[in-house]
Amino acid sequence: MLRFIGLLMLLALSFGFGYLWGKQPANNLEQTVRNFSRNVVDTTLGIERDLHRRQSLVDAKSSVVQAKADLYNKNTADATKELALALESLELIARGNGKQADPNA
Image 1 (tube, rainbow, N blue to C red):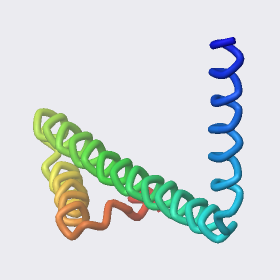
Image 2: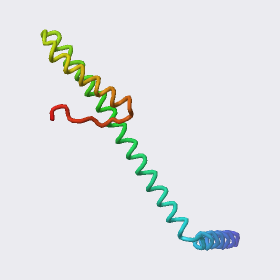
Image 3: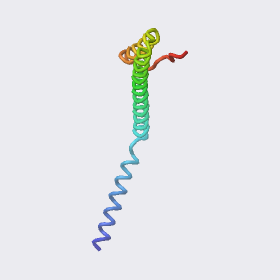
Image 4: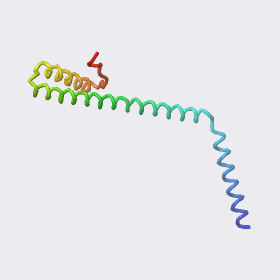
């Protein structure tokens, strides 16, 4: 008998919560979905900006390494060009714009 009363109360509570949840307007759900979508887009754009910054740092580092190799081979003109590319990459990062034009173009 105690099980029956417990089951009956559990069913009544679940029905009550379902009824109250169903009475809420669909606008709350739509607003929640919109906010979630906006958060996903913002997070994705943040990750993309971070990847561009990291790519610019890698490009700058490779230019410095290439400049070292050019100096070792006594190619000062090529080393100067590579250091200028590294400086350009670092300036783009400092300005907050991680995108870099293709240096080979």
